[in-house]
Length: 114
Length: 154
Image (spheres, chains in turn orange, cyan):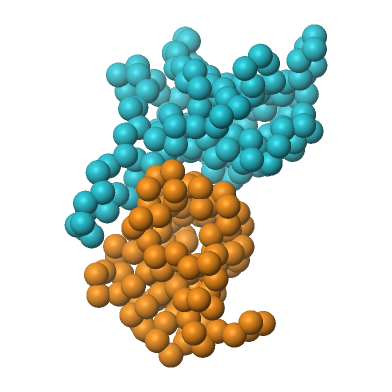
């Protein structure tokens, strides 16, 4: 599964290089993010720019991840593609997550081209 | 074990396709990709194809998880065509009958301020019901049969 992490001063950036977070990989995705975030900063930002497709399993995995991290930590998303953004909007889960247009809006250390 | 039989069937002035595959999530991915190629070939726009794929993914996930209860050898048949009223889709499987012989209502959970109560599920049937028209379920012999269409306002 192509999911990477980069550590910043006050946040960990998770980059999802999978085009789909769906029933085929939702469980592995959740496990991988948990592994990458079990230590490190309280703030977790997920770069979703490569994800073109999210089904209800994928959405459930994102919610479960946020809940598992707990109230003391922040779980935020960046760069939702149109189809993914539509799923959040339809299910009203866009009111539950903090969503940034771009990872550099979420983490100030990230400059263009990084 | 993933095998995909694909047949393009031309009927009168309709264009239709039929796909038969096994009930595993990767076969579902393949089927969705093939469906999108066919729909695009019929001239349907990106937005319509994306919405149809979204709905079909939810329907097929339910077949894998609930009708076939994660058995990767269950049979799934996908039939799609353009007819009056838009894009028609039919999904058949030889899995377990829908509980109560009826489709789930697909209502979203109430969102409260309680972090621990945030819903992790219940989204699939809501999306199916919201995005489709004429959603119908029938049990025919050993087969479940779900039909719906993507109206132009989906």
